[in-house]
Length: 369
Length: 230
Image 1: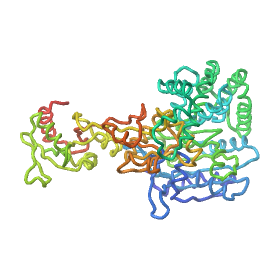
Image 2: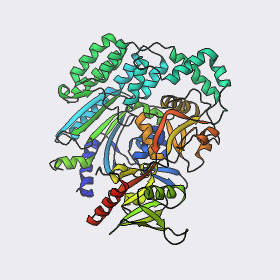
Image 3: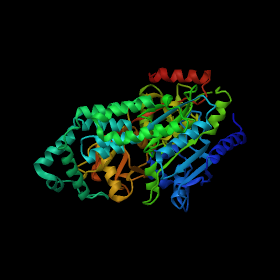
């Protein structure tokens, strides 16, 4: 329904806004090494991206997004600070019969800046809000940093905290772990039997009677995990009151000022959350200073938990207010940890987002299907 | 026009399919020599097509055959959104096999998917790459592991002798079809207690995308009346 050149013109119009805000236009390859993307997103990306094979370079993927190549480019010697904008096709497989395009334009803006991450968060959100202003959109914000801070405040072992942190992006597994760590769900009978056998015979005794060692995972690794299981079985459950507080953090859904007040109340029970809530408050002030009406800006603590797992702080999305069936018109967030993973030991605070110009044109044209 | 029914072209699956239909009063027989892939059905307006069991999902998805007999594992693995493309006419009660996840039996610390996930995280930290699961059922395994929330693994393709990959050092675990578990045990592997991904059996499928005019619908109704399923 949309002519490609008209779409490109619309994308260029939007990109001019990003360039006027100080972004350097950058390009990225269409064919990306699959390994990096698979290591980052996990095996699921195979189901969502187009994988192809090069006789020499091995598995390649048709660019599923720009974040990875742009971060890599920056980490290999970009200016510091730096602001980039890119515009080009990305490729995603779609469910059979969904009718969604598998090839579409993506327009992005990314900020790599150490000076004031909170202000950079606000800068990106305000810029996107401004670029998309005439459209009837509904914005949502969240903060993965609040969730990780809430996990860190739990009175439990580091191993359990690490397990919960690892599964922030898999809500179902997260829930199952939490139920077990709080004692609501007893360990499976096989685990209980293993712990009983370990207490009776010791790890060495059990390992001596095990099947022959095969594969790369050594018996020493099995032994280490047995020790970890014994330690875990001796870990007292997370107190019900703490789990309840975590539950109320996860369920939080309010306008930003109300959400902040609620989180301040929670800090009374969980003082460890204070630093993260201070950051949320500073961001709210920065958003307000950047001209965003924070009183009507929704905050959802759960937001960002089911998207791709590299955001680790502020997250945001813009949806059509009238067309709930459409994917987000724009989305983004902070991904400091990603820069460390792709930066070979170096890291820089980074935040950014993308717009789908074809949805902008569709909604500008009246939003009719 | 008659309806085209694809059935496996050789081996026990073909014999059992012929037997299943014969038990329900539908006689199928090979025409010509034993080596010729042509066959006929007596009594109903059905054209029999002998095809490789592995090709039947593709033919069903394309609507080039109206009905097809093959393993439910192959249909679910090979046809994206399979339930939109085909419909189960009858589960036939033979060709049973389970698609399962198995790990080395020496991993006495691993009995569940929960354990597998924890081990995958530790394995990646120690070895610097994601724990490898050898399989030829990429779609089914990936969807299953996403659903149950296992992370930090990778699928490596194995089109045969999958049970040997762990001993050969090309995978840490496997996801494969087993009926008795004998081969798994012989290769020092053990099935995870909650590692059943799919319970497969020979199944008669109807292709939604084939041409279903009045004559085809009537022929299907005749056949269904004989074999006695919905």
